[in-house]
Amino acid sequence: MLNALDKLMLEKVADLHEIPQGAFNIRKNGAGVQRNTTANIDIVTKEDKSGIDVIIKPYTKGESVHIPVIVTEENINDVVYNTFEVGEYSDVLIVAGCGIHNSGHHKSQHDGIHTFFVRKGAKLKYVEKHYGQGDGNGERVLNPKTIIEVEEGAVVELELIQIKGIDQTKRDTEIRLMDNAKLVVTERLLTYQDQEAESNITVELLGVDSSAQIISRSVAQDDSKQTFYFDLIGRNKGRGHIQCDAIIMHNAQVLSTPRISAHHSEAQLVHEAAIGRIESEQLIKLMSLGFSEQEAEDTILNGFLK
Amino acid sequence: MLNALDKLMLEKVADLHEIPQGAFNIRKNGAGVQRNTTANIDIVTKEDKSGIDVIIKPYTKGESVHIPVIVTEENINDVVYNTFEVGEYSDVLIVAGCGIHNSGHHKSQHDGIHTFFVRKGAKLKYVEKHYGQGDGNGERVLNPKTIIEVEEGAVVELELIQIKGIDQTKRDTEIRLMDNAKLVVTERLLTYQDQEAESNITVELLGVDSSAQIISRSVAQDDSKQTFYFDLIGRNKGRGHIQCDAIIMHNAQVLSTPRISAHHSEAQLVHEAAIGRIESEQLIKLMSLGFSEQEAEDTILNGFLK
Image 1 (cartoon, rainbow over the protein chains, first blue to last red):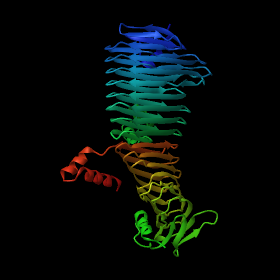
Image 2 (cartoon, rainbow over the protein chains, first blue to last red):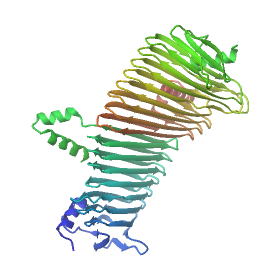
Image 3 (tube, rainbow over the protein chains, first blue to last red):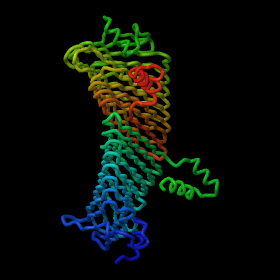
Image 4 (cartoon, each protein chain N blue to C red):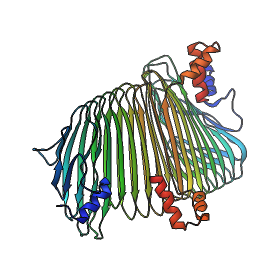
């Protein structure tokens, strides 16, 4: 059921060279095409709306769930609601990329609304990669929404990556941390041509001694536009740190608005942000080693986004 | 015409122990009470609305203008529009504090709308201090609005200080920088009880090679609430830096939202912000030197806001 193009897209968004080990659900052009469950991880199609429930049993360790989505046709408008129940004291990896190949003239869009319940003491790594390609002028649009409840003592690591080729994206991420919960978010974003990307991340430190770290790195090229809103809210004793760095090139625009708000005297919140061009010293150094200007630039950008 | 209370207020907001040297205009309870002009600095009462025009001749060096405002009655709602023409290549100090003594039960409010034209090559230091006192429960409210055009090669240094006793303040500051213009803003803010303070600073780097530095430090105590919006916009080659630090105590709240937006690939923008409590190591160190906890706290806060 998966052709060569499908496989290429799966590799781009989920690093999959073959059908994954463990639990998976592959969605193509708005419909599920392949699924596997395990003794500990169940995947159930939602009955009230489009989407799946992924249910991970308590104490499940070292397993993974891949739920890649591929869109290979134009004129697709796929909205999907996925719910993840990550059981107490489990330790799992969830990979949820989306690849769009649009070689037509009409828009193709995928909106994934993901809700996670990360139960007490669980450990979740969640990776979301976005990739687009296709030589038509049909737009490739992705609007993911991610809501995560991190219960007592749970640890969540998020990797949000937009590799290339997405014309328009609006990414909303909302995370609530209970007592002793811990969050690390890494965001990587590259835009070029006249692409537009908006990323809104809201993190609420609700429980005692929760902590959050958000690291965002982006490169804006050509006439592209990036907008970042970060909202880090300290409602209890705890620590939060936002760091966002952007490299701006050509006629691109970057707007970065990281709000921190402390509603508790023992909330410690820090943010740092910088927008600037590639350091010319770095360029010169690489060029003195024999790199062309383009190669030097690419090397620096890859290092920055890696 | 100035009594002992007036003189105390003048000292608090303008460090004046006597009638100032140079040009000045003292406003009390909504009316001008004393004025002095010099050969180089004229002060003219506006005819269309309440306020004055301060006109500083080109090449005026080393002179100062004091325009303190004092409010010693309750039920005052004083709105004043002042315009400052700072002539080419001049180098001047303008001090514009406001002190409110309200021992009544009704609100007293002063809104100063200040517009500055800082001409080519001029150098301006502008100090604005706000202070309130009075044992009544009448509110003391100050809503200053400051608009500054900084022309080619001009340098502006702003000191915005709210010492104490202001129940409510909304401070709007808008600054536009032309080629090679330079700006340094220092903000100091202390709130306590149930005071509320909002500070909005917008800086546009419009000209080539302009630069802006904004340093904001605040202490929020008791049930007070502070809100900061900084908007640093790079529209040309240039550099901007925002740094805001807040100490939060008791049940206070601090919201800090420093936006940076780059619309030019050679705009380099940086911001850093931190909200946290007093470092306990610092407290312990001072207490080991014989300070009481209260004295140690005061010493740290004074150092932070100085």
